[in-house]
Length: 328
Image: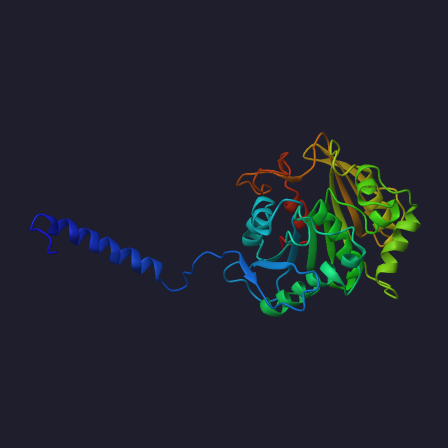
């Protein structure tokens, strides 16, 4: 169809705008925004997990890697975005590995932090996640000395698994409303562990970590932990036990070397003999079960509120990232 004489000037304007827009989109150095991608064939995958990842545009070689493990009923994309990790990856230039559970493994999409066959080195879900780390480091030329692992709830329980079973792969861990390694076995059931806790001394907790990687003498990953005081799904005693477990693994005592408040919440730091912070804890007064977020564009803000993503004016991902030096 041929345009009418009256329509031709308008068509010319539209064509001019289209040409200008095309020039902008195809300008040198401009690329489409990074997006979450699924990776297949990352290894034998004995735990039958799915691997997703986020790599910021223009990410240089030698950058850190963060493994972020979602909670029950969540998925990789929702947790990566809602928890603030993708936002911080763009800001601070690191890549993110986002394992995803499948309903065939667990009907509630929980990582199986309590199953003996999934928490041992070289087996099940733990081995699958370790294979994802190796693939990500190879594909991005990442810094193998700056790999961190974090997770919420069941993802937090699996974070402790990775720290214990593969300590040589992780510089640090961040556990949100999670559980100490071997808690289900120590308590006799995952539910007793979650709702009551397990009766173990600091040495017994530490021994469980040491038994997960026989012969390994360190260094062990450092820990940053977050726990709501009004969490009735994973009781606060679990953060106490995490502190006992990982201070013992690092050979230090259970007395905090520094106590203060951050965003109004109690915060403690436990240091080793050299003065290095090996365990940090945040007790989120009045918070229930979920990941602390602080939506907004401020320098310390990140995350998006939602189910199990709780706006408490403190973003756990930001606090972990700062502790791990991801902002440098």
